[in-house]
Structures are given as structure tokens and as C-alpha cells.
Image 1 (tube, rainbow, N blue to C red):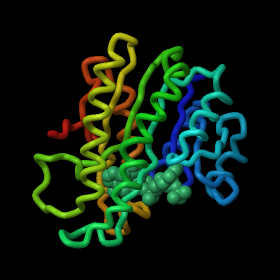
Image 2 (image 1 turned 135 degrees about the vertical axis):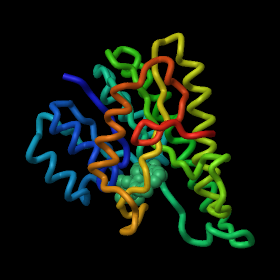
Image 3 (image 1 turned 60 degrees about the vertical axis):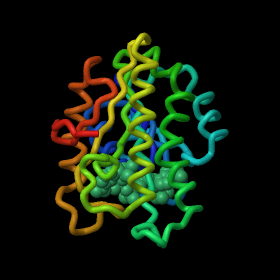
Length: 232
Ligand code: NDP
């Protein structure tokens, strides 16, 4: 049985990752900030209790991340999916209106937490069969794709996680660990909004296919959910 650990699974893209992997027979460690209020995730887990294990995890809480790694110390984790993310909407979009505290927080969740997760769960990933670390980033972090300006906070936190994961790919190459960066598309979630172009089902099934196909030569590269390469 293959094992995946996913952050931010109570809604949106993370919840759909849980649904699809559990449906296909994987053991899913589903992390959420507040298990007691994660109603849809609890409903999925109650239908499939052997496949879905729910864990409390705030991506901003490094001691909680370390504690969960201790709890799962005997596990092998084939794929770590860093999905949890924030898009601070208040006062983020325009020059002169930056909320610098929100910026620092976005860096903690979007940029630092994925590396902390990789650091904490490295032993479980290293002893697995597939050995993959996947971070859900965004095309908005692409420097060459930025034609719209604005969104200083979100864009910079995603550009930063891209370079962080590129370094990680190089550092873990000798350990046989593959590091993937994925843009999920513009997806109908709380973050993507109702006018987004694709469903969570389409985004996640596409990303799962890309994850399946990731090889060592793809490590440290940036792909969209449909397999297209995204320019840095
Ligand atoms: P949602 O806003 O719908 O969901 C975000 C998820 O992240 C929630 O489960 C949320 O949990 C969790 N989260 C936020 N902060 C924390 C934290 N501190 N600790 C743990 N979990 C946290 O977003 P999406 O599902 O759309 O986005 C998932 C990923 O995809 C993100 O990384 C996002 O940046 C990226 N993305 C999304 C796009 C889109 O169009 N939707 C486009 C490009 C990238 P809680 O409910 O507790 O807040």
C-alpha cells in the first residue's frame, strides 16, 4: 500500500487529493489545522477509516510538525504533498497598500512550511519506495509570466518556494528523492473563486498524473497540472 501525506486537506485542492488517493487504495495521512471542524474530511474518513488518517497540523507550528513526524516515525511516506497555502487578500494587491505582517505570515506558510515539512519527514520519505516531495506552488510565482503586476505578497512567496524547492531537489538528488513543483491551474476553490477555470477533480487528477510520471530528470522543475512546463 502506497502512502501519501498531504497538508491543508479540509477543503479545496487538498481535500480532493485525499478523496482521489483514498479512492485508489492509498493510505492517506490528511493534515488539517482543525480536525474537529473539518466536516467534509471527517465524512470521507468515516467512509474509509483504514485509508484516511486525520492529523492536526498547522503549517505555521514547527513543533507540531516535528511532533507529527515523531508520531509517524515508523511509517514510510511515498509522497509528501505541501498543499496548504494562503493568499492574503486584504491590502495585498497594490503598491502603497502592502500589509507587511501579512507578507511575513504568507512566507511562513507558503515558503517556509514546505521546507520544514520536507526536513521533518525526510526520514519517512527516504525509506519509501517512490521518494517524492511535491509542493503546490503557483504560476503567479513565475517571474517571466508576470504581466499583471501587483499581488506582491502571494507572488513573492510562491517565487521563493520555487527556488527553495529547486535547491532541495539538488541537495536530495544523491538520496534518490524527487522534488516536484506543481501549478494546479486556476481552480474553483475558496482561493480560486467561483469564476476559476477548472474543477478540483480536473486539477487533482491532472496533478496526480504528473506526480506519477515525475522522474529524477524532472526533479526541481516546475509543471502545470496538465504536464506543461512553466517558465521560471
Ligand atoms: P483554499 O483556500 O481553498 O484552501 C487552502 C488550504 O490551506 C485549506 O485547507 C487551509 O486550511 C490550508 N491552510 C491555510 N493556512 C494553513 C496553515 N497555517 N496550516 C495548515 N493549513 C493551512 O486553497 P486551494 O485549495 O485553492 O489551494 C491549495 C494550494 O494551491 C495552495 O498552496 C494555493 O496557493 C495553490 N494554488 C491554488 C490556485 C487556485 O486557483 N485555487 C492557483 C494556484 C495555486 P484552513 O481551512 O484551516 O484555513
